[in-house]
Image (tube, rainbow, N blue to C red; front, top):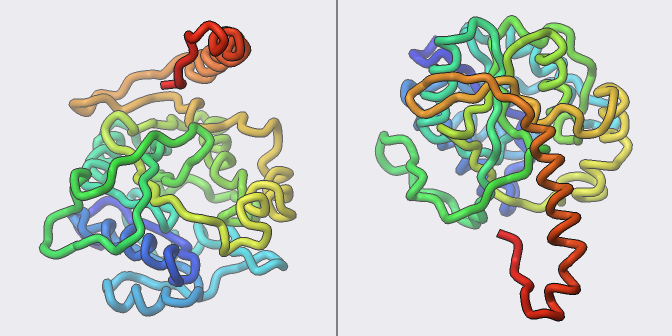
Length: 292
């Protein structure tokens, strides 16, 4: 066990082209966190064994897959518990850069909750080249290109105590709804869902979906996405980042969150009613302006 209380788990795509570049950026950023977390990569996709050897991180090759060849969340989590000892596990999409403040934020949350799920809104950046990781210092935000906030339905990082998620359905990784199922399951068991965005965002390197049959539509509306939705149950987008029960504040305090989903719906209604629907009239009157 390392000095870090977290083990990071990831299921990389093949290390090819632009996706290969951004995955190397992401995984290298995890190795720079202090204290360095334990890291396990899963699967046999091209380049996974090589980067695991290069960075001296764990690699578990065989993982149960669907009949279409997509790895399954339940087996990944079961395998992870067999080979890790840290009190927290983190499933992180392999294109997500983590900065030091993310590990610090999650550690602060763990100091206040014995059992919890930590999540964060992502920050979208466009990065086309490998980052310079010279030296031992963690990556800083000022070393990254500018970006913009992501959507509340885009969830790429899950940090949770290791005694959670022992009864997981065979959700296909990398397809819609497995992420929102993790939030749903925590809430149904009365476990706090802590949003750490105010301290640390998950930094997402934008990419295409060429690795999935049908591209982005295949990821969100293909056969395996629809199967995930059936396993997820309920209404689409009923459990997103808007449904976090707590948020971590500057200084380490945690407070309850209330009416986030309701507030978002009101804001959307106001935008649709008073901005979008009046756009043609405002344009004719010369009063139109871009949405902030």
